[in-house]
Length: 312
Image (cartoon, rainbow, N blue to C red):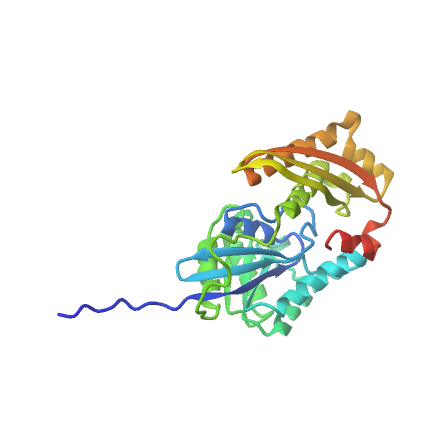
């Protein structure tokens, strides 16, 4: 008796843009899906400044995520570049995941701001299949989810609406399954199985330092801080061991900001460096010698030449 061949499902592979207002949880979600810290996270808006690729492999599918800067009405050269990056990404993907936050306002009302409506219009304009992700469901009572879904469902003809928590991981697997359903069939994966991100170790080093500046200084330093890696010396690194020497410049725009980043007797800079070094050692799998210098460059975020040099 002939045995039946098991029906093989076609591979699905494609690009998904994660978009939404600043600080809505895009990077937290990407890190959760990938299981690695490839996108820095802070409570500050506009933490993500460039498009970050994260590749997720699962049986029968490969999702290439683009974490994008927050969509907002931009003022200033840096902000305009960030928003342009996010909008350009919409044209290059197979599907869009737009995030909004769970939770209701006073008396259970859901207020949809003008900027969110504008972001939804840009998603609609892209013509791509769009999934609405209701982010941060861990912070909102369950009974508030339905009013939020109800409020947002008419903004666009969403392919699906999925509540989830990037922080706890709740319902993230279901969200990924939904995204796979809207990817095209493919003869082969888009990327080799060992590719996780397009962020080079040197870039990640700069981002890890910037992340700690934002986390440790809290509200005292505006988001207009940048980090440039001057040296990334791997000559003493051998087979996942040894030492990597990294020298980084932290740019701020005023002397008063420089004083805050350095701290009394250099205490704040030491705290920033220690936290960044520990994360870098986990990433690189070896010891790291990290040297930090703070430099004032007035209005760097408005200078095209500086933005280009910093890859922004």
